[in-house]
Image 1 (cartoon, rainbow, N blue to C red):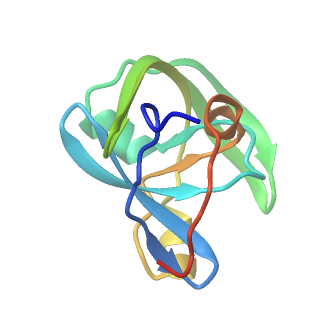
Image 2: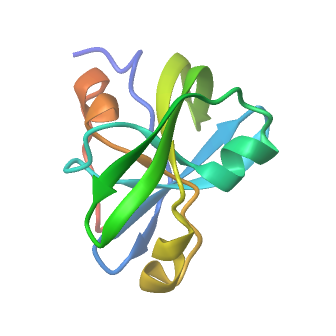
Image 3: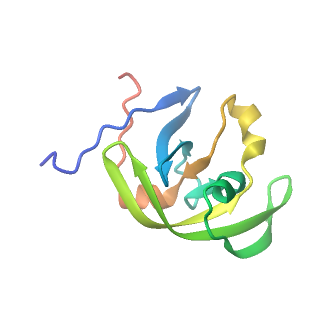
Length: 125
């Protein structure tokens, strides 16, 4: 097997939650890695600050109530050693998760990410 497409990405472990460094438009963000989350998701406040065009706005049911959801298209993400062009991101408010994690969460890399990449987490290292 060739290592040509292998990237070792540093992460922060908060309990059992993996936090990855992600950049969008040169801004450093913290994303949770969550295989149980369906889509790659970005916090609404961050999307607005990044100047992303939000479309397909709707109110959807979520645990605990309803939430405003949008889409941002053609979003380029980068992680150390990995560039991911032209992603569609679901945009929702994620601020309510910060107290739970004890850390700001700017986005979530979900099934969309796992569908494109083989992910191995080395918890000991």
